[in-house]
Image 1: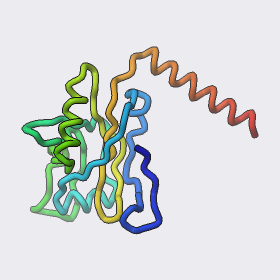
Image 2: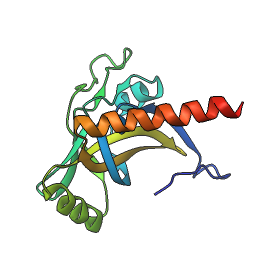
Image 3: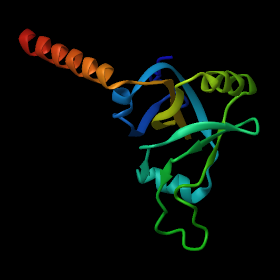
Image 4: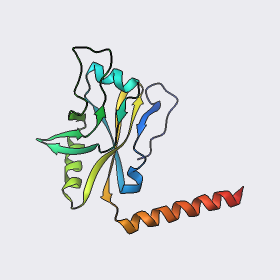
Length: 157
């Protein structure tokens, strides 16, 4: 599913953070957009760009989709009402989306990782990449293809 910014304020996308290494490590089959439950200090910290996506992945527990490994660093000015940086956080998905995600994750080698976090209007959204891990030879092939594309672009100029 392609995400393209639209002219309206509700559909405008502003990327906060991306996991660029994910495309190298994962053979992505599909994407899923999800909201996330956050407290006030987490939102303030995200506004400051203090979020790390490396290692963030999704699991289904008790019929709920949860994100693990998403680091939202503490907000400096939230003294006693601070949050846990590595806490598991609930994702906001429809029941049928959770069921489909669970079927996907039950397949051998399939994983769901967070590829980017962004603002859609005033809401924080996650882009979940669902796919299988690449083997070493697949990674080498991806690097060769990227090099070939880069060489072709240079030749055009």
